[in-house]
Picture 1 (cartoon, one colour):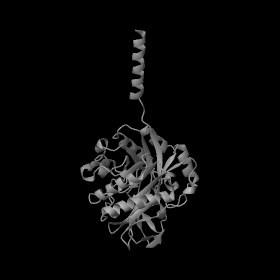
Picture 2: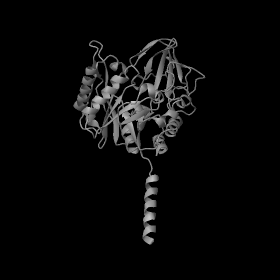
Picture 3: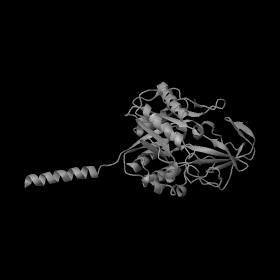
Picture 4: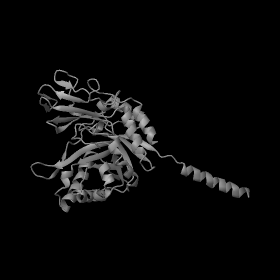
Amino acid sequence: MKHSVLKFATLLLCFSFFSCKKNVSEASFYYWKTKFKVSQTEKSTLENLHVNSLYVRFFDVDLDKESGKPIPVGVIEGLDSLPANTKVIPVVFITNRTFLNLSKEDVILLAKNVISKINSIKKDHNEIQFDCDWSAKTKNNYFLFLEEVRKLLSKDVTLTCTIRLHQVKYVLRSGIPPVDRGTLMFYNMGDLYDQNETNSIYNPEKAQKYTSFIKDYKLPLDVALPAFRWYVHYRNNSVVGLITKNNMPKTNDTTIFLAVKNSPLDKGGRGIDSENNTKFKVKTEHLENGVFYRTNDVLKLETLNDAQLIEAAKLVNANLKKEDRKIIFYDLDEDNIKYYDKKTFTKIMAVFN
């Protein structure tokens, strides 16, 4: 009798252990520059979050203007300066137009060339990721490309790709890519072309139109969160382009920029130029950091402050399946990190753990 009771108690304990097993989320970052060099601030951030792997953009793939064939663009340099004990996960961004007019043979060749290029930069990977905002017209070629890549990888290498929110919601049209895992990009969800859009990077009202579909997605998902800022450049109410970290204008220079009043970011937001205004009008035509500005051009600053970033983490976490996953911040850059409280990234990881 005692033996039976003991056996039952042991089984109950085992059941409790497995049913109460806590999901574990691991922090990581994207590294999105052509030259690899980690500053002390960036290194400290990695250490504080116990980051042991980085998603490093190795190169882009786009169509050559002259030949019309896919070529590597912006190949990474300097990986030999990688911090000790940090694994590299290669990421390759491929433009959607690359897949538009490729034959099956072209796609198979592209897969071979891309893997060969990755291995020429660095060998021995446990994961490779592809980033492509595929469409209905390119879905078949992109999925064939992923299938061909899978054939070229050993079985112990995880194949992943990025997933946009619209691809989750409209899954019948978008399809499920043939990969082991997806990385859900929980940003860029607003209307970039609308100057009255509060924030095209993160809009909680628009996000909620997609979140209910996440749990039903057939792939296990990691999550990418936006730790970056940019300016949307408008001219005559049309978008000229995005001004990112490499070309940031000095909007606090009142001789060439005028802060547009009554256009505040959330009060208390970090890194907000010129008294928390998000819009700036160009006063003087000029060239700055490779960007040409005409008089009366408008720049709209978009970013997430600490509270918004934590809010985004809570919103997506509430709609995810319970499983181990990586939380990948875009992107590792001192100019991004300095706008956030040091505890913010830790608080976000606590949301998922």
